[in-house]
Length: 138
Image (tube, rainbow, N blue to C red; front, top):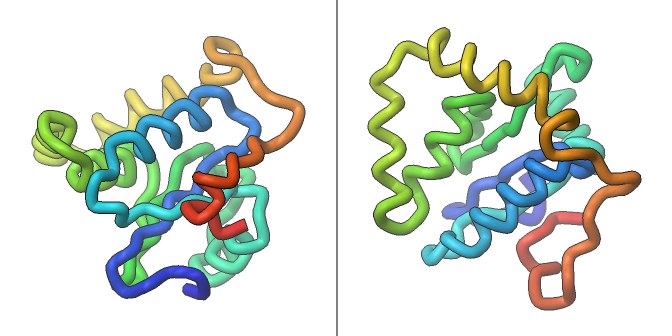
């Protein structure tokens, strides 16, 4: 993917969701290895991946994680794979990958379905500061 080096991973998120925005800020703060870049699901880079992986955006209410090995993870798997790369003790959350995906995704879907009601929604995607702009593809 253009804009990523061989070690970087791309987090695709809902740019108008307050919970998603807070999650991105959390990842940036705890990404001590500096391996994550970000783009919104509404952005051009995301459209390329969505087309390549044939994702139905009307059914995808999720964070996505794209890796250098051309893998795309979604929902709870994406969140836990991201957590596994963050600093201690956050990386311990990856232990939840042993729980069957259908159980993890049930909880994830419940939160995703209610995120606007609980956390609110913005009118537009966040605009990163100059210092953070390097972490975003667009």
